[in-house]
Image (cartoon, rainbow, N blue to C red):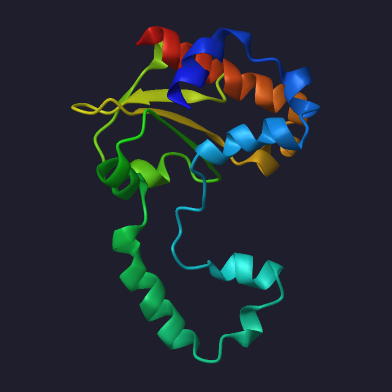
Length: 159
């Protein structure tokens, strides 16, 4: 995937990506993704209509608290040392509180995407808003992808 990314970073075509078929989308299987929370949050459970299925809220809160040590970017960086990590989050920089970062203001994109180096690691971090937040900023999906892609271009060419 890294070779593909390097050879195509300057040519990210959002229009083409929006029309990808099943075969092209298979490339995305090489990208790890997921939720950094190991236990579903109460808000998510409520939105799914599952909060009332939790019979013991006190025990749920205990489990939630115990799981915090596994949550955060530091776990992923230490375990996998990826080349790039994109964090799309409602809470700015929440996931980087246990890891040292050097924020690169020179690589910011439209004040929406921020980029960071992680000292002593090859991993580059791209932080931006949760995709739903872009709606509130009146930024459509195509523009959102373009902004995030520009962040990746800047990370790659900055070295």
